[in-house]
Image (cartoon, rainbow, N blue to C red; front, side, top):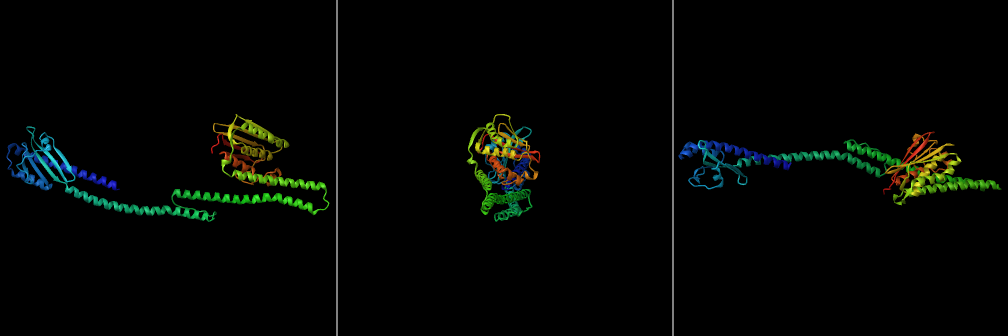
Length: 447
């Protein structure tokens, strides 16, 4: 606003000065026409012309000098220089027909040098020098400056008031966000809030509620995980205790029964050991990806080795293992972890398959990723369970999982390993028709 005010005032002043110069030049032209006869005849005792010159000097609050062609001052409204000679570059140039106007801002006057030309002879016969005061212009500028200052101050106050009002209006919903965050910090995770205001503020509200829902889901998942861990670890111990107590409470137990019970106890211990090992794997995978031992390996050979190891399991149920490779693939991965991840997918495809079914494993790649697809002809996964299938200890059919020896941690381990490699796993399944897992992993690991 200050820059605008200064520019406007300077432009206004320049416009006033230009108008004043044009006005003076117009008056100079009038005086020039009056003085032609006097300068030609040399008769300078013309009362009417003197009166007109004095009147013009009074109107413009300035000084007017008339110089003849001999550079002699024949009229000075101040009466100080009459009869004297003036030698000035501007006056001399004026006798060549070159008039001049300039504004002295520091001394507050406009000087106009106007040549008097004899129109018949086309000859300059005199010069009119007009020094006009610009105090009137300066006074008008001062008035404008005062008004500009008042306007600027008033506008600044109005802007400040609106700024305070709108900033308070804008920050009010943000303060509500802060209060909600404080409540969240204190543990009130189930309290949602709805903030009305600007579009961006409402988006923050929606995002915050989404975050709360996610945190609440994670908290429930954590509690369920702890509960499941406790249950899974306690179940084999309970079975072992029941079997041992049964043997201790009976006298003269046959050797065959002892062997049967000890075999069952061994199985429960093995199950306990498998759960603990899977839990330890999860703990390791939850650490940073800096624990990965990245090497360049042949993915084709890796998959063939995995299928060769799992083929005896598939042969028990007469399940056909099919491997399709579209091109040779080499990638930078952690061989141990990626083997565990893919083995879990193929092993699950075998376990939850139908008798005389099939499992198809395919490998492909482009310039950036390699793709592993594991398809089966198994029992499929219900739609309402597909989002939770990667949760720890989640089982669709707990009885069947126990029969197949599953701990409910395999897919969770698989997903963690793939994400550590900056990869993605997706699931497509339909009940009683089979399941497909698509895995995409970068060829070159990015830390």
